[in-house]
Image 1 (cartoon, rainbow, N blue to C red):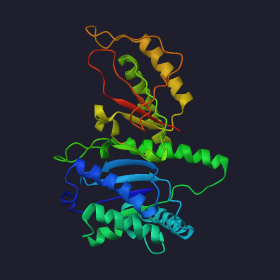
Image 2 (cartoon, one colour):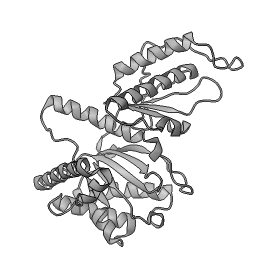
Image 3 (tube, helix red, strand yellow):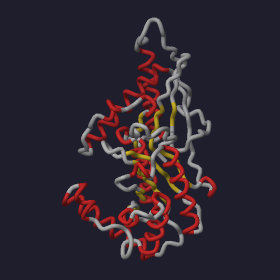
Image 4 (cartoon, rainbow, N blue to C red):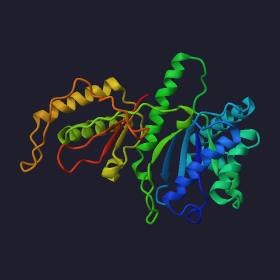
Length: 314
């Protein structure tokens, strides 16, 4: 997992959304020049709460040319960082953790730091050149089938979680259009995740939204995480993302939402909801255009709903 950040005075380096997108694309090209292979993985754009400073999260397949020693260094740094966060808290723990480079990533780390520094600041900010990239290993298993399946689920759940951070998907005032908030690298390498879309009636959409919101709250509570006010901050265009919902589980949620919509009265007598019988399968099988988004709903009325649902499963 790579995190690409900007200096404290970030406004002069990334003043708007198009610049952030150019930097993201430029990093993919720099990856190809450094390692001789196209990047493969997921990316997500975020903005730091209150400050508004943009950053990028990348969940990437490591380059085949990376030395075993470099990867071992990233593993050691990951364990050290986790231990510091547990001991000192998130903010102080990150401060006490050394940057990548040297024994923590070797030449691979140096290439990443050098490339991102040139892209973001032209290599003119010394501290950013040392700390502008953070790398953490996510998985350690290689050949175990059970571990591999767990890896795939964790990847989907992680990226679904990144996409769901409504509080960090609001750009600062004057930043302009951001474009897509998450997507994939590797289309030219054949990495094309399967995306399926489903259009439902507005009444079903409301029931599905209620159930997924409740499911997300239950899982947060079970893990001891604060519920926060994500739902209150969520804009209609940001939709709802729930991690770890498989195809069968979503099919059950979909069928129950249909049944509940049929039982309930329309929200307004002047705009009756048109609820059709549920299809045999919750998926329509059509390929989507935006990787990373599993389901999109819209109303059957003239004013179509723009809120997407994303379910994290692979």
